[in-house]
Length: 286
Image 1 (tube, rainbow, N blue to C red):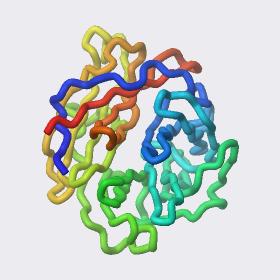
Image 2 (image 1 turned 45 degrees about the vertical axis):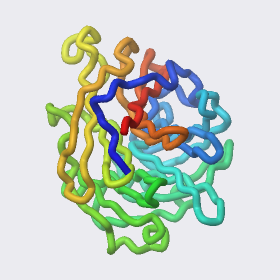
Image 3 (image 1 turned 90 degrees about the horizontal axis):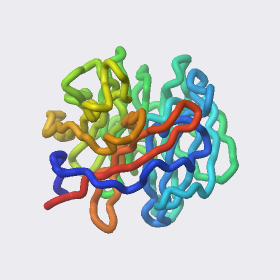
Image 4 (image 1 turned 90 degrees about the vertical axis):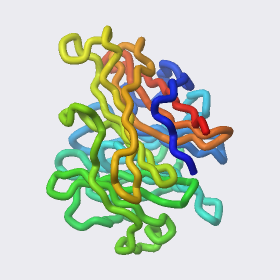
């Protein structure tokens, strides 16, 4: 499948929604296009160091349909949706948070509205021994999973066949390469990623700040693309999507496949304790 051209102008999907359960920013999101649901992860208010997350299920207009709490899971940097052959819907997230609040492994579980899951309730997978900061992304088009992780505090990606990964085969990965090319300024924080076909998309940027990132400059957010076969950068573009938002922190990337492919970018806005979220997208242009 063709990659997204990151120079294509962004369009608005969801705008300044205040429907998430927690008053914190979104961290990542993924789509269940079979049932027309959007899943959004947040850190629980005051739960960052413990790795406590809130998982929201929304409809495609942004209305909240339910939520779950995930205690000790991580920071919520990545999320994936898997449709199993038997019809079961699985949600993939990081899990088993370290003292810094980031997952040491990944897991999958079913969504149950109002439920709370502890680490002991799920099967935690540790595909890269000794790694930290594990986060998943699922490509539903190819049946692959990307696991972002850190080895010696250096971020990398490892790509697996999802069926093999579910079966516990972590040795025959399809690709392994370092995170690179996220932003012209390497100190700017990483904010999300999405695997789609043979390409992996990355998001980086900071919220507005009167001195370092003033709103008049329309932000420092960049979206980039790596080829998973080579690990080499393919394209990187600055985006002004949602530039009129207050605060405007980029948070999360996801791919919507139908009716036409979209590369979706999340943005947090609003005041502390009353955050909102917006989603913009880059349409696929053949």
